[in-house]
Length: 502
Image (spheres, rainbow, N blue to C red):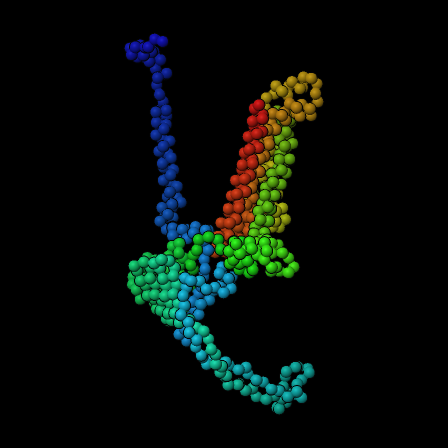
């Protein structure tokens, strides 16, 4: 290969300048594209006010929500009364059961005797002879009824067990001491004292530490301790929200006879213990308690998850069965009628142009909430999408096989069966499997708008804004199902494509 001299290259460039002349667009194309991308990014930053959104975002609140996914809260309330004493109250369905006595909440108690006024009900006496049958209870004549006399209030002596001091340990360096009319919080090296008088909350420590907030003077003070939990100091009570890692009562709820028992104790009861319920074995009772756990509702969650799987499977199968023959009508090289091609393709466009979520809302209104609405939404959307993909695959087949079968005088049905279907069947099945796996995720989303399945239950748990551990449980189940179906779908597609190549 002869290398050209510089003078020869210059001579060629002089004879053919159009070859070596670069256009203005070619020279500045890349800088212009980069500049356009930068300007578009700046415009989006300004239009959506991304800087303000990031600046005003409550990142600590986001961390609290994430912590709620993997933890649970115990929520005692220390309430003040008018006699300078207190009482500790737990919610009806506390994770600690009916008789909570945690070691992180200590209380000093004493027995007091009080005299309490009990107002007596007013007494009304009326002679039977003066009662009117025309208007029962109405008086007749001047001597119809006696004057109503208000009885003097009665007194009652009661002996009560009250709390005079309570201390809550929120963490290694965080303690909340509650006395009648005063709350003292020690968090690390910082101390906060708050006075409460039944109507206002007055912090005595100013300015407030970063972990304490009060929107307006006299209102409640909110204390945030990160993963350890938080608390609220109100004029007449102190609400504690102590957080623990894990999912409380995941196997047995507080009403189960197996609640708060170790694994060995549960096993011994099931294996050789006396029957707790004479009507059934301990194993049957334990399994029933797990399924009908009132806090986690395992049976209901699993049933809704199965509904989601069935919705995705049935919707995808029906869409595949309808899209398969319609794709032959839409393919120009299979059906030579322009009108048939266009009508079928526009039908596909109509079905897939409406989002699956919109179809789900429509069918929920038509059929009512339930899996039927979800299956119909998947069926409609996938029929349009699969029909378009199938018709395009048919229009790109190799006509040699079809022509060879035609040459031996085979009928049209045989030509399609042996000349077309073998070429596109692996592609059709592969795409159907992908949509089945994808629809398992989509069925969760459309379930949230009333189309049934676990999506609706997930949305109900999120709306409470307090059951985030239940949300995490359902999300984990959905992820497991998606991972399993993704693996199955990939394996089947690989075998089909591999077999086709061999």
